Length: 423
Ligand code: B12
Image (cartoon, rainbow, N blue to C red; front, side, top):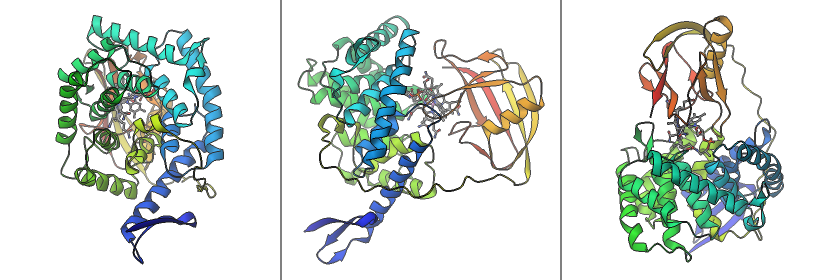
């Protein structure tokens, strides 16, 4: 028989008879350190509070209740105001509003009592979904993307609201017609989110659409997720595996089918692949076998309060040798420019582009804040927009970057290509 108990801050130790299971305790140590890394990200209060981070912290087994409460309060003021002003400016906020609702539910806050610009929060999300649905009807694509559309369905469904059957049908069609893309490639993150949305609907007591309508799209989602598994266990890539595991867990997959993916994520944690708080927030729940659908049954009584952060480690100074990089910009009309800049080894791409902008009068760029960090939005005065389905894609020596401009570090000479693409 397995017995479980806590050993101070060292975490959970599983005991079989008298002998501790070293693998189980190693797993819990890893989770604890990963959880602390996510908690640490709350100390940076320069940007908006991140609802995805909040959601993951609340879904965890381990907590620092004071820090989580302070973050919840910041969300209710800063994020709330930001959403209100975006709504006033008629900007789509589907994904952010959905994540905010899920984060509130995970903190046992009654979302049905809350308002945004004097209207119920839930009604605001319903309206966003109506607009998304209308946009699909006229332009064959959501206003934002199917990742956010699916998050919207999850948030409505998890709060016990019936989701309009036309909204559901649009998601079902998108799955059947293979429209869940990241740029032009398959988006396993989006497939996973869509799968969780449909699974929530299937289990919902208020949903009128029959389980039979959802059976085929759920089968396609499961097949896509399992089919995306690489030899190293990742589904899609390092950053989609956590969401894919979550989705498969909601669909009733057994741990034996997911163990290779769990191992792949644990190897990533050990290697330090996940340093962006957003990446941690999408991976930690899966490592603890939790999913976004657990917010439906969240009980905030008698929670653990054992997570404690030590002093902040000092930031690393860059004083290494200089590295020379070429920066190529390819505009939508195909015109190309190439510039060279010297940067300290280990600099981020963001730093490199800033140095280039400071040294050359004919290169400029702008970024916009996002949950993943700075997103490259304007290059040489040319803006890429969600509304016209264009973006500035990033690659190095011909290979697409797997991370953004703040996380990508320049370790050696290379050619960075920034291309305006349509999707
Ligand atoms: C949709 C999407 C896109 C769309 C965004 C536009 C749109 N309206 O649809 C497009 C196709 C343009 C895109 C581009 C890129 N993406 Co993308 N994207 C996503 C996806 C599927 C959903 C994002 C979302 O809507 N979130 C919900 C809302 C509420 O959060 P948000 O932060 O407000 O969303 C905005 C930002 O996330 C931003 N965004 C999208 N991708 C990225 C990537 C980075 C690094 C940053 C800083 C911002 C950013 O666009 C969102 C909409 O405005 C995520 C999957 C995921 N797991 O999160 C991948 C994801 C975030 N993208 C990723 C990557 C790598 C990129 C690119 C860097 C690819 C490249 N080599 O060029 C570029 C960004 C380049 C740049 N200009 O800075 C990775 C990031 C991994 C990491 N560790 O950093 C993810 C996790 C996919 C994956 N599994 O690999 N993306």
